[in-house]
Length: 363
Image 1 (cartoon, rainbow, N blue to C red):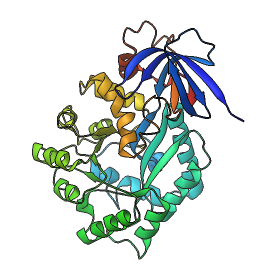
Image 2: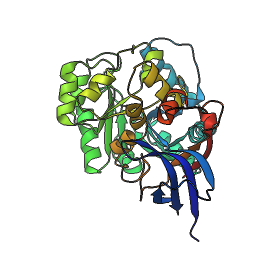
Image 3: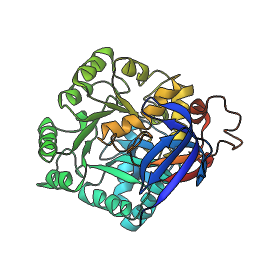
Image 4: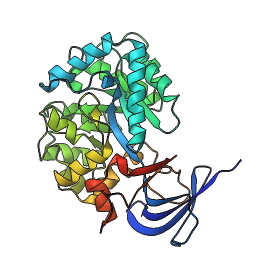
């Protein structure tokens, strides 16, 4: 049976995006109509915005939250960093419970699509796939990696490329060149995504990462002009994680150089990174980008929605509110104590929006 809904109020509309007053109609989770009539019988009324795309996460370390902050290598470098030791020692049942909680938290905070660099080889990817299959309000892009990135066992990378959406590796300095080349060859043959961290701790692994021609790079915290020029020329998108970089001591108020990336026409999306250090709350990421990095509010909003969808080839379906796209929508309460009296609703969502402003997720 066909299901129809009507939403009305302030719509964050289109790829630009624009703020308009009106309504939209949804049938079978597809946006069928958008109009400017405000006098309609609506199921929900408020601020109508696209859900977030969290473009880089590590949800496995949900089993360990808020450890003592030390240097980046001690926290996350494979295979002996704290997170990897914890992942290896965590029973599957505890991991599944933690993953389910984190994915539910994503839904509750307005994220309907995320991309995870999943550790733990085939078992790690399989557990996340299993948990994701039990939830209906969120979609995941799982990029697997061998249990030993420096020395995958025979057939492991092939199997990961088969069962996952692609391969997502840590920095090139951690992995022999032969293994890197094999991983990207396998991924390309499978028609899947290949992505890699680069420039997080320093700039030493950036040139090799660019030469691999990945579908996107993560972090680029220490990228210099020559790196950005090469990325721009090669049309390689970047996913930044500024809150995470600041927490781990590798970032600053100017690094990653996000404004320079945008000025050089590099597509930049946003991720919350390690759950053990950061919440998956993309509202917090937007506020940070707007107030700390002083980025344009409309640009920030696109980085957290449309650009992530574009990087993953999903922008024809999600990432913005337009006719014929999927209804990945959050409705916010424009009369909440937080959002009431706003003179610029898009700026208010970016600078001060919170999960408790959400009254409905439609997906």
